Amino acid sequence: MDFRKQFVVSPGKKLKLAAIDPAQSGGQLSNEAAQPEIGKYVTRMAEMQALLYANADQSLLVVLQALDAAGKDGVVRHLFSGMNPQGTSVFGFKQPSASEAAHDFLWRAHQRTPGKGEVVVFNRSYYEDVLVVRVHDLVPKSVWSKRYDLINDFEKLLAQNGTRIIKFFLHISPEEQLERFKQRLDDPARNWKISESDYSERELWPKYTEAYEDALEKTSTAHAPWYVIPANHKWFRNLAASQIIAETMADMKLKLPPTRVDLDDVRRKYHAAAAAQEKKNGKG
Ligand code: ATP
Ligand code: MG
Picture 1 (tube, rainbow, N blue to C red):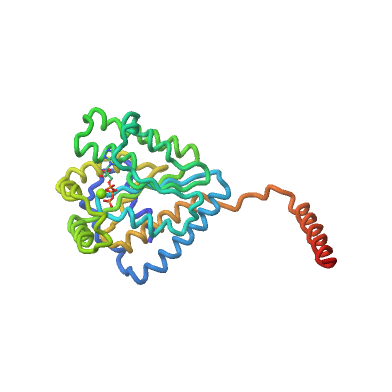
Picture 2: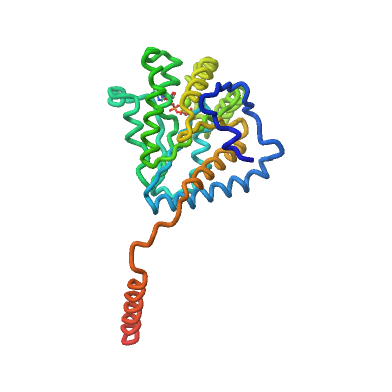
């Protein structure tokens, strides 16, 4: 199955999240059948990251957005753990600090975008400035409504500078969210993840849905597409996201960098050094 085609948000088309089943799992697929597939994509992602790092002429930005407990952390843990920490980083967007709030909304994001050769994952992102900010009226509509165009221009700038952008909305149902909140309550190892605001935010589900539909619809472009990933089943979420990342990286046509030295010359140097070492060892 081509999940890029299946889950991409078509630019300029009305998006209705209610029409996308968060519990779907690709027809015949099962968790057991998916695991080796996921492993294959994660390995390919890691191999291609090594090439990206070696070449240092392009970069990759993965944006993760979702309501609470939809699995952003899980995607980071499962899909990016194979990559070399050298050249890979994850940045979580919290409430802006005083100095961040004193700047334009893209300022903190721009400082964290990937340099050439790097992979960066945004766990939440500058999209919060048209999501939580809109839902809670943190700035007037006249301000947030202009941000979609600013975001599109920002992403165009990154793309023209050699950055591939993939944006995921992890789509879960309210029932599944409640189930995950329960697991966080029941499992002492997960208690730390609970926050009281999770419950008040949950009350705003329809407003968030509207804000997400608007944001995804207005900012899904050919160079920075949005994908709505059905995320009730964690394994299916991992399968769809890993395939989409691996295929996007394959499109980047990453290759080993050209050799920068005269290999014959270096080989001669090696043989001379090896002969000298042998001579020394013979004497010793
Ligand atoms: P989880 O989904 O596992 O609960 P999280 O991403 O919610 O993790 P938290 O530290 O609980 O992590 O939350 C970060 C909070 O910061 C979120 O509620 C988010 O909406 C908020 N935030 C991020 N960016 C902004 C912003 N620009 N303005 C206001 N709030 C923001
Ligand atoms: Mg939270």
